Length: 177
Length: 177
Figure (cartoon, rainbow over the protein chains, first blue to last red):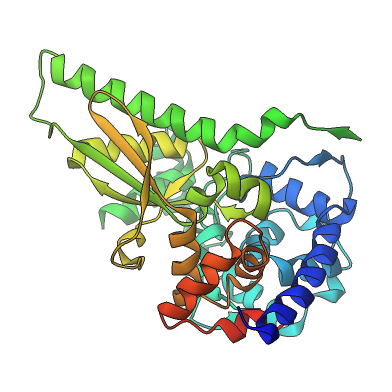
């Protein structure tokens, strides 16, 4: 190994030691722990338990520089658990746009901090182990129709005579069409 | 603030071993059952990607990797067994990555025996080959991980040699940013 390479590695080692200290700070452990508990990340190291502490978006971005997988799953966590995060104004405009598109189920090869939007969408659509939050692609969309009284009455009758509610009746008829 | 015990470190390894053992037992039951079908006598799984790093004792403690919940694996098994494998992964909050087949490894990569059962064998690719693959094919996403590995006393020097011999951009990783 030549001298120049040795020096570069020495400097890199110092930098890495500083970064390792960051991983031990509560604010970053809080992020990793939250993402792990929600089933979005797998973590190797032991983690302190920090309860009910909101996550600052600035900390997510800093941690994301060290571990891009945090950025990869962040939109999925933000879309489903927005109230867990604070300082949402710190979301950079391009990441905000990415999140807005992901909410609509859209994704492209566009990257943020080296992570493709397509890869982010995957986690928005995955089932989480808490079972409480719905994957984005299974979320119901609120809409309204003006039905004639006759059609509405028929819909009510169909619902009363079956185990399905009115929404399920409409869904089943559409799927059969 | 509670510090989780050291046993938490082995969760991922234990979970994967549990899945493999349960799958092995399922194959055994199916082979001996009244409606048994012809299952290949050899069913093989090769674990790759971040999960293979997470279940490696040495890498887990020295590089502290973080992973998304997708499991990269090359499978050599009947479709029925593959379905059961996927089912067991989902039960543990994991997903089989359908793009695993596209993962590049050098020709003479090393694999280590991870589980050997009656009807199922599982290997994990050696950490050096996994890191090399990441350094060559996805340097941007894995920059920090590779940097951590390069300054690691155990594997650093060998990884430098491999990256150079496989035509990787070592300078990209030695850049401290």
